[in-house]
Image (cartoon, rainbow, N blue to C red; front, side, top):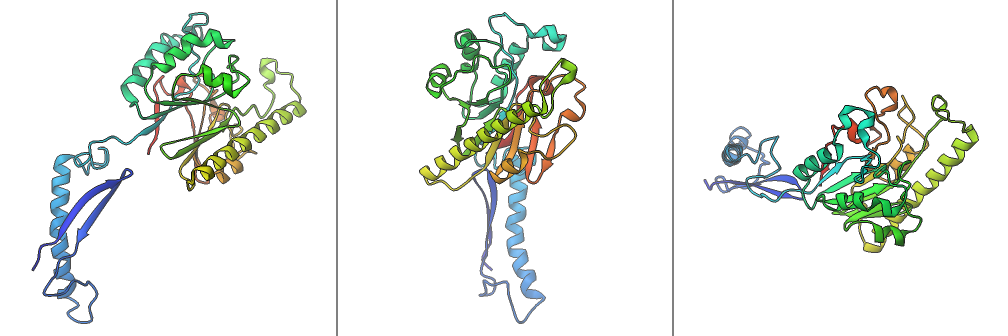
Length: 323
């Protein structure tokens, strides 16, 4: 009886076990019309032994541990990861310290830098959907962009309601941003085969408790514009994929505002996000300890929604997925 074999390999982060079927008494087939007891037993034994050895060896090396990176013992190259950390509210100039909103904001820029540098690899991707800096003008954000440029990884952002520094043209934005940083507005980007699109979004109703005097018509006009810009961002990603000859791969959507109203699971945006093929929708905007139904998180129709405002994730990049 020839020995069987089993090997463990990894392709694009997926673990594969390949079993080599040996010749048993001159037969290499599992199907049989006779010897229906001995035939399967013999075949199972010949492939079961190498699989058992593989599990034993792989377990000892950590390659098959559910907590270990796939094939860690056989391939030590880390898979790129996608992280998210939103609403950084940087003010490296000291003009607007965030600890006025509570002691838990103390030295938040330093704490974010420490955790970011510790967790994020240079080829990873970090999503930061909005409210990046308190600066009012691009020049005032220079120190904040220097902070961002010193962090590892590719960075992707969308505009937040406090990003007053945001420039009006793609050319000026490209001149402002650090290397490997992308600001999405009616645009999209693809990195490591993952497509990213997004939009700012907006409130679904006036915040009257804060003195908000917008009418229902005002809200509708705002959301209609954001819906249009979301579709333009998706169209830009579709066009880029077509131009590069890429099939649609994994996609992730960025919003600043929650894309779903409080306490609900659908909105005018959700069918668009689903049809675009997103597996995640990452947003921010919300702060505080008692958010209640405003913090909409969960998975619906194949899309996982996550709020990653920095104070909601302990000022630490949160892992979205590995590629």
